[in-house]
Length: 213
Image 1 (cartoon, one colour):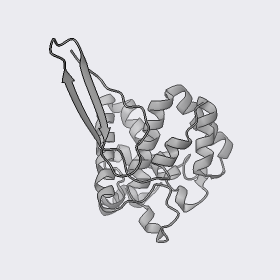
Image 2: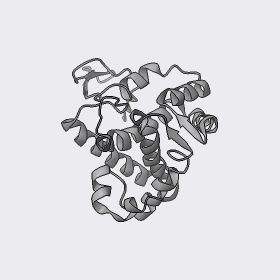
Image 3: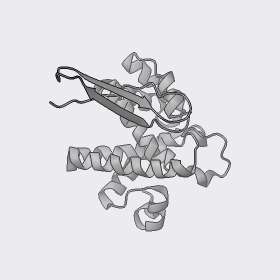
Image 4: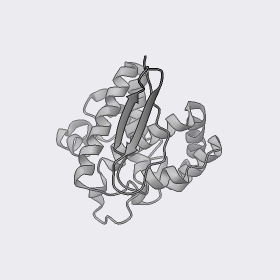
């Protein structure tokens, strides 16, 4: 176990490691599978350790503290990434940064966790966890790359994830949504328009819209 992560508040704050003891222990235990048994093949693939450990700590929260606590955990993770992204626009898979300590950042921890959460949402629990099991079993006691993970998830789900990984792992930024709506005169129809306002290309991901009447 990473004792420094469990005892050093400054390190926890800098790297986004949870400070609640149960979450810290869950994070570090997850590294026995993702990071130790399956080790990233390059530093650019660091999220395969830290994003996984961050997300699996969240799964612990979901299991033992409930859905509301898990949502709060993921909201906090999103906010850490968004604050970081305002200052530094680099991809998760960052092969350009040579100062390795700078890779210990919210991209690899919190955004990495959110990439896994979005994949879980798009693929469904059955295909998502099947893909993770297959990925782990194929790479246990060895090294793995981001492409190894993509391949395992594609095989388990039957979906092409190249565009998703290009945007969320190899690319930078995130979508900024504008939602507009209008009701017709006799209130029998509702028109909803969703625009993306960020610079660059659109993020072509499913966007659930819930309308309550």
